[in-house]
Image 1 (cartoon, one colour):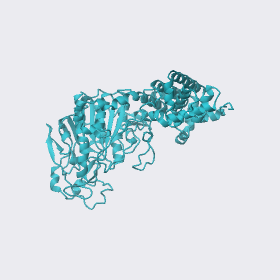
Image 2 (cartoon, rainbow over the protein chains, first blue to last red):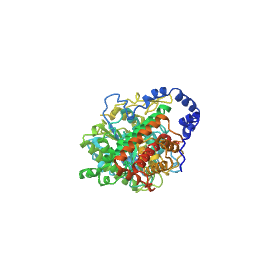
Image 3 (cartoon, rainbow over the protein chains, first blue to last red):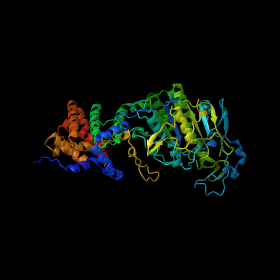
Image 4 (cartoon, one colour):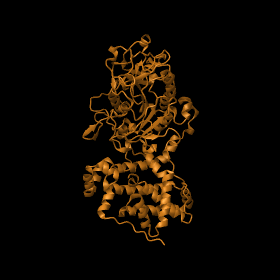
Length: 499
Length: 134
């Protein structure tokens, strides 16, 4: 005989307490909790009115809008994690051949701080690149033999040899490259772009991250969600990371017995309940949550279509290479990136790891280049053929450069290179960047910049400019500061990089 | 666990990142574990509570949110339940499929559409911020 269920009737004060408080909130809010809860109790309408601007309705990707007509609408950012050695790829230094095993002169080093990985070395012997370089295209750009495919398209590319940074180790350096600050917590470039320009396709995330698996894995760096975090910007601007192996998105399909109609009903109920929550407490994250659930629902139909490459013609794989058929490779990610651009994803970021060649440059660098070379060429050509290159900015680069002197043993056959912040090479293609140019110069040692330095902030300012955003006006108020991607110190748009 | 920012254990992590993505929504909505847990909770609810729908709804709310629902929430829940029940009554085959998700065996003496409707109501509650963030 079952006793009728008596619901627990709490004391009204306790009910309020339970309603407004979760453990996490209590410990997080600390002193401000009482104030916020009081405000919520006293004036829930007040909270929701002021937060309406920040949170708004379910499809939260509204655009601030470009400040002036943009050249680029979308971005594909290819980040080479670890810091590729510029002198072995794009920064040709023939004078170094005569300097083999000679010490790096103090006049060149000029007190540059060393990492703990080489500070213990007795000597800093120069390791000239063992790879051959040739000139290509009308621009006459010198490109290493390791990148034959990229070399074919130098006239469509904009090289920057004079990039520089202050960071000397990966975490702060990648953070700097992505967020404009060595200290974590700031929004990344992709999030800023999502915030500024909004979505082109409500059924897909605005900002997608793909983490490609490199063939060689001798020195993988840790990369994490911090790098595509929205920081202080509203949560819906964070990057959504697709898996590199297996299903790109887990749980994309409803379980059996849950039809789209049923799923829709539960989501409607969920949304209504969350709105009640919002009216009571006023946490703007609630609306982010609602938006993410709604986006998840739309992605259930849009993502399988996006990732289904089965109908790509054979010509696609001739362009990108056979590796593009394998899920998780850089080539496959590049192909997916093109499909995403076609479908209106605003910002696609691909991370390719293992460029941190502290040792065994001879063994590893060719494999690294093989992973990306044909695919980069394929991607740019593919975009061009589809009429997307003019409006899509493709960016390639790491977080810093590498030293001309060898880390560890130096032989004619092999050497290693340590981190080097004072100069590194990046390239851009499409999206209004100036094709067929080489901007900036380094000294004979590829150690110091001698002409046209481009700091990370300058680079960011330029990218934002191509997207129609004025980096000085494009701000977000946080902690009393009008936060900018380009930081608080002066940064310039590099006009020479713009077509 | 990667979807919920579990560290990949390659480096020491002092604090996990916080994020809010549609991938997490998909996991908590569609992962077998969540569906199965919701289904079993629904079954237990129907076994232990014979009174009204409201009583059953609050039984589930007690277990997931540590409190009964407020009147406005109850209204929403009743409406969800009504719609879900109608759905499953018109497609009983789907109810059967749902009740087979996961390893726990469904109570075969129960009305399948009713059990399925409550299971999806549980799924709905389990996706509330209050249920997921304790």
